[in-house]
Image 1 (cartoon, rainbow, N blue to C red):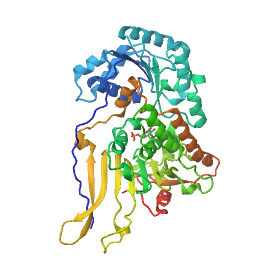
Image 2: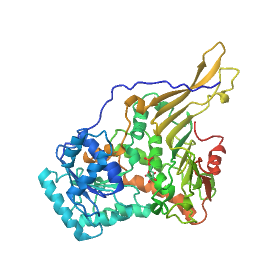
Image 3: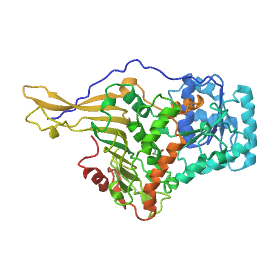
Image 4: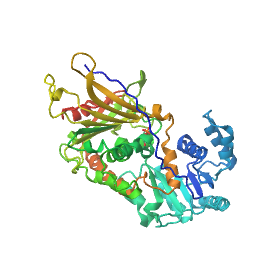
Length: 513
Ligand code: BG6
């Protein structure tokens, strides 16, 4: 008989690594009237302000195509922040004194002059000219034009220094293929050094993603079994119940490989498979992550179906409510061949992981909203319990739950109480929300804070971007050439196409715990 009994753990005192930025900072937000700015970025900056984590001298200069004034912008921000009734009205008012707005037509060179004038004026007032952060919360198609104009107009100055005066923050996607990603970062074109570009993958700011590193390398007991000798296979799932929403325009030219695998999925894989870095700093940590991606065995041209499954959602039900098929969504072509789901079976060819399969899957309109990593351990080599064969004893496994219900769960076997020698499989659980009482873990707070500190550890380095694109290209090209795996439809609200089940079951394994 098997039962699952959660056991509570207590959090010990935390060893805190947080640093309040000591340099005055100027924060220029492109796309300040946009959705991301108001949903995530401005609330994150406000939370840093409340927590006393902004530098003593700080201002935010918003810019965008909307012809707003300082007053209109402040009014919008006040409304945005006021949506959360728990926020203190006085704190909001004080924060509004630190924010300004100057409009800009992104593709018009002359439009940058008033912006430059405003930036210089505020920098003089706040004494923050030596630390300018330019955050591009704009469509990726505008990156090149905006960067060019920022440089031509002297809003960013190229610098090879370790502490450059100006830095640019860009959101994924970093290009749409290997060549465009390379072009975007080419110092000969942009004039910017790697130290000046902060590429955000918001997964790296998630508490639970950062915790993978602490869990692995701040404990003695897990690392010795974290290898091919003890691990049977690893699963990484990022499932969403949402569909493509209002982003079909972008998604039709992206698909799940570009949208989720090139970045978030590869980041999760590298964190779970990396060697311990010498130190947790931007060089050593990112070196080790890049090595994992370099070690991924190239996908074969023939028999790619054994490694790569593509799916697209058809109509179905999510939480009992009927939803449309992808091809019926607004702005989606009725014959679209874009994948909204993919599953990969891959190998990391290095001494630690040789022969251990990694199964990755991600999709939209799936049965559950769930991001998790499961480490499945091998079977016991021998059973001392004569009546139960070793292969029938449930394997241990460890689940790192990234979202929702962030936490960690370890399954182990124990004796079920009673006169008979019965075995039970128990779950040892740690739940972030319960232990730390954290309800709103905002990835952007951490990332913006690090950027102000000039710490690029949790940002994506260009080599990682390129290796990952090369890997995605090896999957996307056969599809483009009509030689790749077929696209399988799956009903919305399911776990993807049947072929994704087959990808793992033919190895004698199954998805999930
Ligand atoms: C984004 C993708 O990067 O990540 C979206 O573009 C996806 O398509 C989102 O929905 C998922 O992020 P999260 O934090 O909700 O898992």
